[in-house]
Each structure stands twice: as structure tokens, then as C-alpha cells.
Image (cartoon, rainbow, N blue to C red; front, side, top):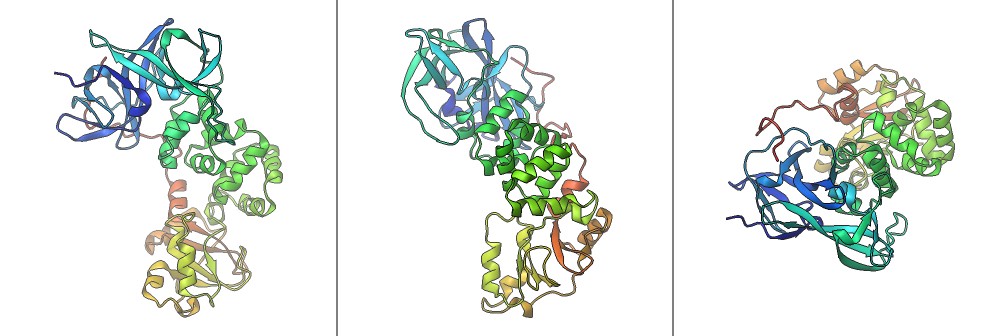
Length: 426
């Protein structure tokens, strides 16, 4: 006998684990798919589950055997083909939440925050109730929620056209736990219009992190949709090498306009990177690795690499240079690896434990030379110097992989299913 309750609220299901009958986890629920029916209550036809590999697949409602606020259980047969909307299908979290409606009782406006689905006697699931907020304000800048909430029948509210602007605060709030790469995957599945709405709702730092995980074409499209002031703010939050790659894909006049709006110090780092060819060490490197003088102590170095803003690859090494310590630095002296820091006494000076055997690479060295050196010596990062022997940056292993992988690696799938049926069922 089915243990599915007669009514569920979609917002309470988002993020729940989905299991097969044996208790093996299939993935996590990310959305519910409903079918519009010409003014009648929409029919819920399935759920979208994010399975391992960050792929989102469709599971029909007919295959759900248990659903409550703690977990969802379905049959073990799931088609692992990537989910794509069909015809009049709509995503609840991605397409209905945060949409404005007009309440028929008094003609006032409200915003959808949740909706209820009821199971009918024949087993079908219909959207019957809307949980709405009146007089709400959920601006990215203000972050406020005002007004009062109501639970109304679907028939008592008029939804706007799909072309109308749709808020995105609910989507952002319910996906705030996603890593930037996973959030980027979710954005790629949206329409261009919805993608811009969601991007506009994100804080600058969060949007910068997500942009860096998107394919170049999508990066350009999203950045171009922002006003210039906001776009410049987001570029400032990006890693300089990623910002340079993005600006290189824009028309030169547009890129220069954004550089002029950026803080001079941030813009200078990006300008220097733009001077290098894409397939050189200078074109791959980040100009802001961890740089310290030889007089700094092990304790100071450990404090620097603890920063959560550093990637693991950048935190793996300290580059020792004579002042100035901003790139291009004074004379490059060598590297202190994180393992050496952990084996040394906190008061010890870095100059006494510096590795002088690791030869830096020229800023005009080819990608082939860089990859050969990093592979030969199992390096996470490689120092890059100019013709005067001054450190100008470091190439990290993630920078190198990003360049060596095919352009479509972020969206490429090998297509090998774990459990698969012939097609969508339901």
C-alpha cells in the first residue's frame, strides 16, 4: 500500500534525498515538473532528481512509492538521460516560484512562495493550493521580506504570462548550499530569460564564483546582460585570470569600458594578463599567488595559506621573493611547499627552508612546456617569471587542466547510464 500522503508542499521537498526500494541513494530532488492544462489546476507529472555526476534526470510521479518531509522513495528503474522540458511542462521551483499572481478576491498582487499538490483518487497529482505573500520585498540588495502570507486555491489566482519578469529569490535561497559548479549546472538548464533573472538576484561574489564555472559562451551572455557598473563589480570578484579570459571574449570596446569601471588595482592585474597569448604560461597564470619575503616566519606563512579564498592548488606553495611583494616582484628566490611548513617550527624563517631547486618557467613558455614540467615534478603550482627574473604569477594545476580539456568539457557527457529504461515513462 502506498505511503504517499494526500498533500505535499513542494518547497519542503526540495533538496531531499531520493532512494530506491533497497535504500540506495539515487540523488537529490531539485524540482517538480507540472503540466499546464489551459487554466485548470496543473497536473504534476514527475520530479527532477540530481544524480551523481551532477546530472538532472526525470522520475515520473507514477514511480514514487513513498514521499514525506524526510525522504522520497521510488522504484529502482530510472532513466538517466538528462532531463529536458517538453511542450507545456513547467518547473515549479525554476518557473513558478517567485512569480507574481493576481488574487481574484480583490485584484491585489502577490508572489508565489510555495504550492501544494494533492493526490487524487485515480493516483494523479494536481496543484491545488498556492502559498503566496502579499506586499513582499525580496530584493538582492535589501534582503527583506514583508507583508502577510495566504494559502489560496489555484483557481483563485491568475498567473501572469511566462514572458513576464519572474523573481528569483526563492530559487537562490533554496540552492544556496550548492557548490558554484553545481549552481552553474542548474543555470545551464534554464532559459536565457530565467538565467538572467537568477543571476541578477545573486550577490556579486556568488555570481563571480558561478560565472567561472560556466562555458565561455554563457559567461559572455550573462555578463553582457548586466549593467556595466554591476558587471565591473562582478569582474572584480573573479580570479584575475578568469576575468581576463572573459574580457578577452568580449568586443574590445566593451572590455575596455568595463576595465575603466573596475578598481585600478584589480584592473591592472587583468590588463597584464591580457597582454599574453592564451597558449602561454602568462596567459594561464594567476598574478596573485601567496608571496612572502625570506624574513617571514613559518607561522606567518601558515596564516596566509589558511585563507578560505585560496584554492587548494594556490595554498600548496609559498613563493619567496625580494620586495616589492606584488607582482611583478623583486628577485624570485624559490618556493616553500606546504609540507615543509608543516614540518618546520613556527618561528623559523622561510629563507632557511626555501626550495631553490624548482626552476621557474618563463611567462612566454608554451602550454606544452608548462604541462611537461608540472607532470614531471608532480606540481600543484609552478612559478612564472619575466625576463628580469621577477615573479609575475603562478600556473596552478586547475588552470592547466581548464586549458587542456576540450572546450565543451563542462557540458560533455559520456552517456553511460547506471540504470536505464528506453525512454521517459509517465
